[in-house]
Length: 159
Image (cartoon, rainbow, N blue to C red; front, side, top):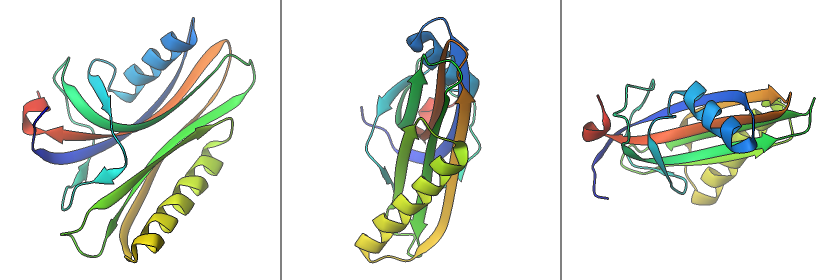
């Protein structure tokens, strides 16, 4: 896969399903990324890449994505997923994406992501220019999923 990443987009969704895999699929659909092929990536945001609202993506596109997903079949359990990114003062340097999921609340997931991004930049010796977190929680009925993702998009991925 050889593409030039032009932008990133963050999204989150949650859903129920008849099985954990159906709940995951339904959460992807709720997040607006259910009809693309996610290629799981590690956590680097290329330098000088804008993070935009999720655009329309071609069905079946292969899209590099950093994501967190939590599924559960425990009725009444609260689950959450979050992703966040931070970029340094120097736009020529890369940003960092962090993912988190667990049997927790949205607020706790957001706090965890912020702490992870702070540590990542402290270790890199870089000041943070911008940080954003996207999180969602879900209370399970039968089989539920909470999902948060940051996609890296090329012009060819867009409708």
